[in-house]
Length: 246
Image (cartoon, rainbow, N blue to C red; front, side, top):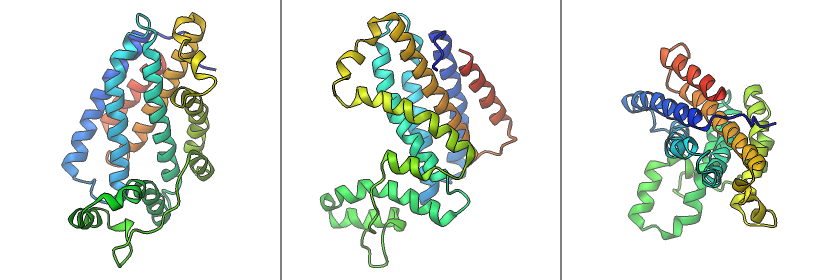
């Protein structure tokens, strides 16, 4: 059950503090230059996308009480974030098997290349092969990767206990926000939730749950570059607690 006693301004301010802490992690990543390999690049991509997303919504969240319809825009952005987190946990589930983990990353990363390959010039294709060698066979042909969906993500998250738990919390939030993303029979009523105090409080609660899940996932990604006992991790954990208590 989503928490309905939420201080939107406090939540927004805590999101802003969290994003500032993540900027220090970004500096560590850039200095290490450990974002060249396919798996590193995947984690970096998810980290940067969600960091930027949180940076973009904190003012909207801060003003949710004065501008309750902002919740619609935040929910749509959180839907994207929840899908990214399911993909992240799908990959992390094979963290103990580097070969399978790489294959899962490639399945996700190959999507763009597969559907736009014929639009590239010869030079552009050569550059893609250079940038993403694991997506191609020895003859330079794009390997055949099957499509990945939310169902495949969920079915593949079975080994890592913490990610199983997180995925089970994320999926219903993703499903609810998807009813806003994909126009259907329920969308008409959902977009008017902002004008119903009780339903708007429920939406705020789901938004907060989504933000908390983003923060937890980003802390997990940080471990790819930052030691678990680094003071920066402690700072991030404190801010996550503040977000939960907003």
